[in-house]
Length: 263
Image (cartoon, rainbow, N blue to C red; front, side, top):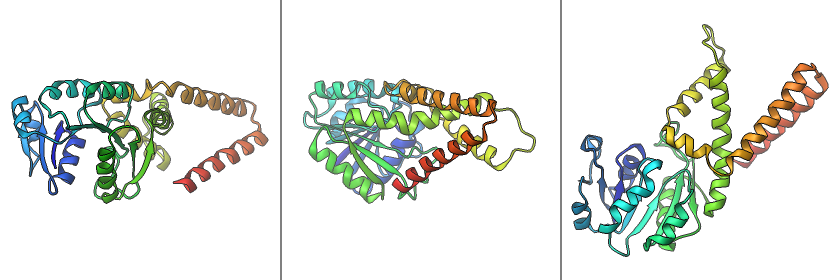
């Protein structure tokens, strides 16, 4: 299959790496310097090159902020039957765009950004495939993610954004709060250092990505739950209520235990 990757960033380069030995691959990137570490693929900087290549599948791996605009830029030179796809972590407005695009489409979300994941060992990582869209496109990504050893889940666009609101916005907001109140520690404890490593990783993400995850329409309700839990915990601490504290710790231990059992 002829596959065109839009963007030669971390995820774009990752997809080139895993696809280039089984498919004819090309990457479109306006900044030639970003293509220095791509190999076994064609490197395009103009639309004419894409038109001549005649891709059968486009994987849009540009920064979330530019996902739709990148599609609009290349669509005039794509074959009519070319499948267009994205790997965005937030799907807001994508369903409407796809339905009006005139192209078959597939949308997925590999939930293992390069910041934390060991890209050579993905058996503990997950990927979401949106159930709406082109059947053959979904089969392609299902086969690819299966070969990578990923755990695959299938959701609608709406179900995806609800899941992301919980699985990403909750830890992100918790990290923001930790970062907002932290002070320099000359002799930090183990737990503090672990949280600090997580905070540095999260804050190394693109600002627009963090913003879009938090602006997900389902995020506010998750943040409100954090606020409510903090209110209860503050009240327990202020009253030095040992009985309520024990009950609270039991509750959250059960939550963590259940979540681990479901992984």
